[in-house]
Length: 382
Image 1 (cartoon, helix red, strand yellow):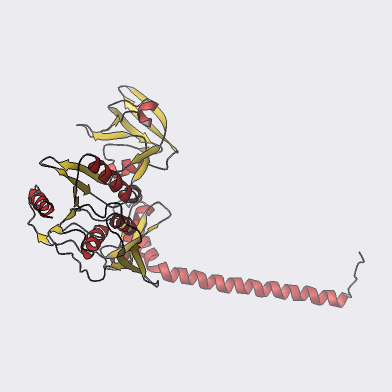
Image 2 (tube, one colour):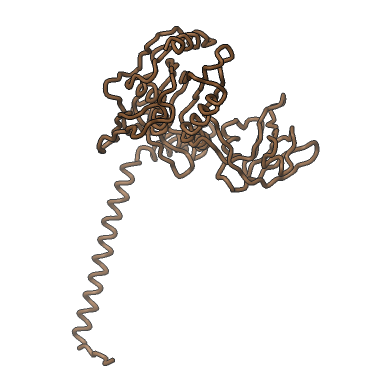
């Protein structure tokens, strides 16, 4: 390759041009960097100033920076005046995530406080904890790097023991005068959302109690109904009382078990098109006689189930008016394991108003017997 020799004056001009470019680039970086810093200071200036004042002047012991940041986030969300937009700390977020998933990774123990407020472990049969050597009554003193004391609350403790399925957790227990350490691999444990039984006084009536609506709920209901039918159930009572809801689409899946076709609900998120959920094939249990029980704590996706079945005249509703929550919250994970729930959309069922009024108003009683009696009466009359 031939070498090109440039005249000295050309080299000088190129060198000067390069220096000018470097200077201009440095000025641009400085200018835009300064603007960015000013913008960041403007965005967070009051928060930083307030934190600085507290640290310099407060006479009491301050919480950790993490706690201070959590308080700032809470205050910001509370200013929106929306009861459904809120902050959730890491431990509580872990528990809520498990409940919506319908299962969790754990070691298979029951936790109980003793009279001295120690946390004692009682492993389930064939659980990972039992197989590792944990015994009934062992006092839990550490989970990974978390020291367990009498002041440790149950939410913090459960979140520490739970985690991804297949990952190991290290626990330390006190047994008499010994301190024992165990490395235990977490396994999948279901968190049932549905319980069921035949009514003792009406053996052909099956009762399904749904306490929340998670990813697994429709499948749980399918298994429960098949079991009830195998045992002679010809009628069903679906009890949604005190069900605060859960996942919207899981509620839609519950509705699809009982309808042949038609619309279930409409939903819309900010700056997005309206989405319509429908039933496109005949539900497995679309012909079995059904009644619903609701009360003032029946909310959100539980109201979707009740409202959709009422719209299609699939099941009469017994009880008192429902809660009336038609907003949808997105859950955003934050970097420390906490989360914020933000109202981001709404759902509605055309022709149905919320709170949902029952077809058969029944005054609530502590035992709930009146509603059951009315349900059996209606089913017998069909």
